[in-house]
Length: 103
Image (cartoon, rainbow, N blue to C red):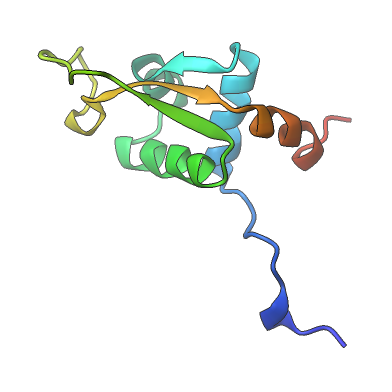
């Protein structure tokens, strides 16, 4: 007998998380936050949610700056002042082709 309450599978990835990880994977696995924000064309809230979703699943690692930027680059929201880059993890690179197979 199958009980839906006992289903331990994580919820499916969001569309934005899939797109962000795909971009990271295609661009060497490590991208600074500014170019990632520009490429994704997501709002800062949506990008933060996608990166946080991936980080919670241990697919990406967020690299923080030792000291937050004194001056923000043009177009970079305040919430990303202390973020340097987003990097894929070995686990994420291993799971990506299995989760989203390319036929």
